[in-house]
Amino acid sequence: MEMAKIGATPKGGVCRVALTEEDREGRDLFIKWCVAIDCNIEIDQMGNIFARRHGKDNTAPAVMIGSHLDSQPTGGKYDGVLGVLAGLEVLETLYEANIMTDVPLEIVSWTNEEGARFSPAMIASGVFSGDFSLDYAYGRTDKEGKTLGEALTEIGYKGKKELGNRPYKATFELHIEQGPILEAEQKSVGIVTGVQGIRWYDLVLNGKETHAGPSPMNFRQDAMQALSKLLPKMYALAQTYGPDARVTIGYIDAVPGVRNTVPGSVSVSVDIRHPLEKTLMKMHQDLEAMVALENKAHQGSAQLQEVWYSPPVRFAALCVEAVRNAAKKLAIPSMEMVSGAGHDAVYISKVAPTSMIFIPCTDGLSHNELEHVEKQDVINGSNVLLQAVLEMSNENVFRNKEVSPNV
Ligand SMILES: [Zn+2]
Image (cartoon, rainbow, N blue to C red; front, side):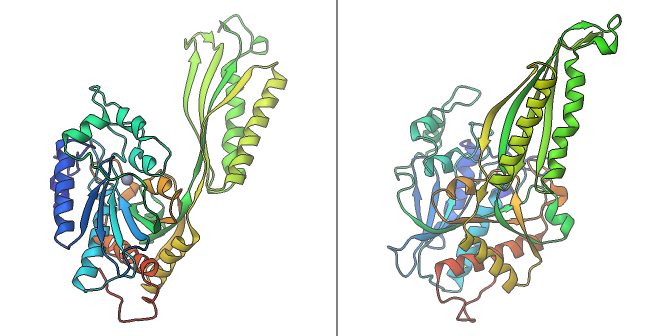
């Protein structure tokens, strides 16, 4: 609630867009809290903040807890912030209980996760994982033409530390679900096993423009009618490939787009998703096959072009297991699930063993000022995070029952 005062909006949300004055204030406050529990602070060249707590062996790879402090312009109090501050709570708990883990612990706040000001989203964790170059990231511009590099310098957070220069034993990200499943299933914690794969397409169907009156139905080459036959087949992919499959036709554009002219062409966006690469590939092949069939029936009238592919992510079994164990040990109602949204953890999982913990948000609402969470779920999620972090950072912790603090 202290953090949410910075950039607070009248409707109860937060406007703390990346690399603004509010973002700087939020970062300063977070660092102040970390320093109070003897954390060592480092800022890297992308402005990512690393708050490090020493372990018994400081040469060993650390266990990382990461998320983001930036928000959407009309964002909520919890998206991202929850994961960073739950990390702080974990470190505070260990500090107060005077427990030193075997390996160091680090909380990381990633710059510009939302992508609201500088596109693409998750750019700083993407530079960390080597998916984007530093120069590419510095050159991204906002609507006013200011570059991300300039904005970093302006708020005093262009650090010196090189990106991705040390290994991690494990990383965890606690986040609100941003969807309705946990609430509907009455579970307090989601054990996130991976992130859906996504394939995007542009589909164009061609016909012949003609007058809506004089042309009998059986004389037409109507692109819209062709689409109307294809749509049920596309949606049927979701049924064929089970409850984890998603099919979204979000956009239809008819040309010439006139009431009394049979459309000569129709352009459609297609978004298909599935957590398993093999299944997503089958959906892709089925889609290609139905478009090929359409072409056969109407002499090359359909073109399907893939425009983006983001492969499914499967989180590290060890980290997922640590979260599962923690929920079980604490007897917290939980379920396994796959994330439908992207997160910093997607990029980090490419360079370190990673998994995520979800907690429910009311009505699945997020990227909204009314975003809300229940206190008990925050406590449960943070306790699961604490126990998962302890399991990965201290070999003996589960053998010694006394060393089991709660947040
Ligand atoms: Zn987020």
